[in-house]
Image (cartoon, helix red, strand yellow):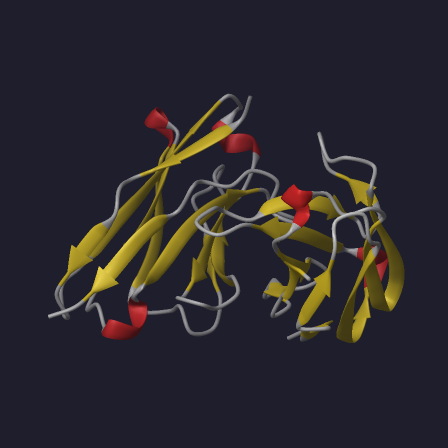
Length: 116
Length: 108
């Protein structure tokens, strides 16, 4: 069955960068968009944007432009989220989730902690 | 951007009770492009309902969704112990996709 496996937790200092991976299996990777969703501690999910896995074209939500980059490596069915110039307020769980409309398959999440 | 407002914030119920959760949109959600998710502590959200009223694969029939336009409802007919969790609605009528702030269903 379809599955998304995310990379492990990260502890970073302010100003550093992080790259989170999301490896898909059990379905054709390029048949479904990939979403990225942030969930800050004690908060609800927040849609960061998505990437067209056929074309590589990303769409970013307001507030997630500039420091956030979505990318792909279709040869290994993997999507990536890179965040640069990390700030304390980037501390959150980051999820990848499949599909363009509702999100039917989710990764388990990657915890990114930004602390000096 | 479509703002989704969920009510109540917390629902205190007992196993076997009926739960009714509301999600109101700031503007009409066309074609009922609304989903519901369940999230338990330390877990990713899980899709329950899509297109306002269709159950996702493997979701028990005690979960049902209804509504259209700006008012949507998730009903859990008889709460099981594993149903105590936080529930979120999400619209996919337009970009950006948005989520409600959640309703926590807790044990009374």
